[in-house]
Length: 316
Ligand code: SAM
Image (tube, rainbow, N blue to C red):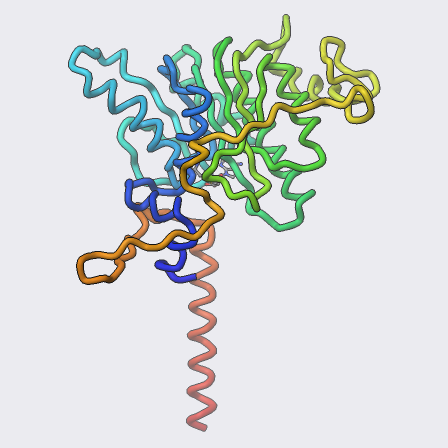
C-alpha cells in the first residue's frame, strides 16, 4: 500500500502524522482516557511494551509537559514516567527508557528501582507479540504478555491504582476477566473507535487495585491457576462452572471515543493544497532498530546476489 493510499484508508494513521504522534495507537490511549479519566491525579506511571513510543508521548504531553510548564511546580511534583520495551526507542521528553523483556522477573526490579521505593498510580501495557494469524495461538501469547504485565503490577502499582492492558478477544476472554477481577473490583473491556472492528484487539481497563488480603506476589501464578479450576478461588464469583449456563460471566464491554468522530474502518478523502494536490507526510519517528531490519538487509543482500548471478549468466 502506497503512503497516500494508506493515508486515505487509515484516517488515524494520517492524523497521527499530522499531530506528531509516532504511531496511530496514541489515539487509542487518548480515547480510553476520554471515557475513563485514567490520568486523573497520576504522578507515577509505567508504560510496558512502549516502542515506538506513541503512548509514552501521550503520557509526556498529558502529564509531564503540563507539570513542567506550570511555574509553581517543584522538581518532586513532576510526574515520573518509565517506559519499557524489548526494542530501543528514540528519546521522549520526561520519559525514562528501559530496554528489557517484561516477562523477565528482573524487569520489575529495574522499574521498582526507578520509583525509589514509591509505587505507581498507573500501569499501561500495549504489548503485542508478532501476530501469526492463528487466533488461538495469538490470543495465548497475548495473554502471557498480560500476565507478565500483571506480575509487574503486583510489584509496582499502589492500592487504588489503575492497569490498562491490550487484550485479544477470544475464547479465553472470560478467564482473563476473572483473573483480573481477583485484583481489581472494576474491570471493563473497551474498544476505542481508533481500533479497527476487524481487529480482535480490545483493552482491559482495571480500576482500584485491591490485591486479596495477605497476597504475596510470589503466589500470583498459583492464584491465577485456581481461577476456573474445579477447586476455584474461594472469593471469586467466577469459580468453577462460570463459563456456561446460569453462572456465565458477563463482561462489561464498552465502545469509547467520540462516537461521531472518525471511523477507523472508513476511507476519507485526502485534503488537497491550493494546487489541488495532496502531500503525504513522513512518519514522525521511524523505529530505530526494528526486528525486521535484519530481515530486510538479508533480503536486499540476497536479491543483489541473484542480480549478480543473473549478470554472470547473461555475460557467459
Ligand atoms: N504502545 C506502543 C506505541 O504507542 O508506540 C506500541 C506498542 S507495539 C503495538 C507492541 C510492542 O510490544 C512492540 O514494540 C514490542 O517490542 C513489545 N513487546 C512485545 N513483547 C515484549 C516483551 N516480552 N517485553 C517487552 N516488550 C515487548
